[in-house]
Length: 592
Image 1 (tube, rainbow, N blue to C red):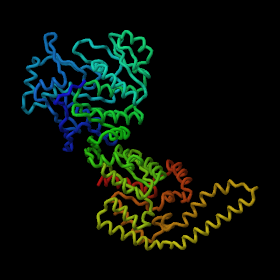
Image 2 (image 1 turned 60 degrees about the horizontal axis):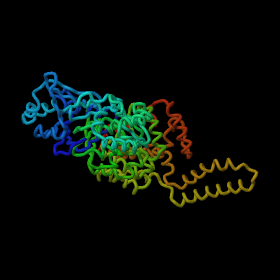
Image 3 (image 1 turned 180 degrees about the horizontal axis):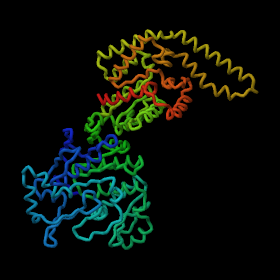
Image 4 (image 1 turned 90 degrees about the vertical axis):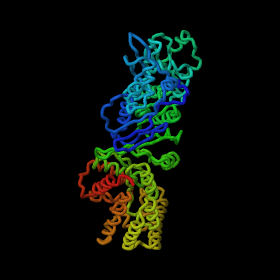
């Protein structure tokens, strides 16, 4: 296990290809959409850290490390050995992938030659150290090798050899094995035990309780033989145990871990996030690439001492942006971020924030047909007022985003102004936007409250009369009345609303001059990521395809979702026309 010394090998600075510099802390999380290079970043860090002349890299330009002042300092921390064999000096250890043996022969005499290399302070010191010691000090856990980490392995054949992970666990002793066992039990309600009862073989066994396992391997053998091998279990358990053993039993200064959530269900991904957050410290630096919001939540559940960098790509150009500590705090504490699945947007190219679940399902279907290769996350904000808040959160998270709201967002001047303030629209544009909204409202000639009250009351009286007539004759079938009740109530609610015609028809209810005012307002709002549907409410979006608006919102969305895959694409018609506008805004307005 790790000895407590002052020296710890670690990454001190990363320089990316856009000249962004990052000083990694104990735990660094690399996140972002698919295919932007998260895994490649780890590979390039590994090759630069272990090679005297690394090949050309694409994303990581340079890596700096904290190096020891002397060989004694290094050996005290990591128990380095070189030994004389077959007339030469040899070194042997686990390769950075922790699945195979890394060894070399040759070089100068141990330890004097290597003490001289470390004490030198020339410009080649980083590269010299990397070629001689980098592979011993760094672990690179890839998804490719994840399931091989703790497979059945041979026992050590050399007194100074640790050539597989189970040998490392064996060398870690009973304490290391108990730590592994406890972590596995928390996540899977199962225990694992290291079976070394066969002298030439090491294997992990799986069972409910190994607390009373005899310490003598000869006595433990019949007990262990009754339990299945870990090698025969599911990929999730094997992958989880592999990471746990690597962290607890292998003495390395830097761990590069690619997608630790691979093969894991969400609760276990959350748990592995908690585990890694708890075991990143001054002597064990972790750099993790992930595509799992559950893993990220697990990390933030345990610590705020984490560096999160989001990688994105536009065309062939990558960007690397570190999230601010205040943003991380909001990620961890704001209920909106978890309840509305906002954090998921970190792992997409962009996000669309909409008012309701049916809006999210509708626009997702539209974008899937019109832009099948676009990687977008659709977030239900539950109401108009929350849309602007989520957009601002995404800006803080460095995620390009837009919000979509119905035309009736213009109904209330005070609420609309509050939304513009939430989106940080500058004062001159806000004054212009409010003036344009006022002009549209003036033409709308909103029905006075007294008239709306009278219309709603009249409809209520009609509905009451129908109910009394139906109830008066018990022989009548009540089912038709009850099935129509939902639609009748919605019709009453519609009669009570202002801007009714505008809500239903959008700009089609305006004169040409007022429509021109709307498009000016539309352009101002898109600059802060707010898209106002010109057709009115969602149920008016398919009128160009002769699918009329209805107050039966549930029935309409069910029908729409069935029809969209078969509709002809025509960017002169909605919903495609509006989708193209949203798409273009997302591409231009990356983030504020």
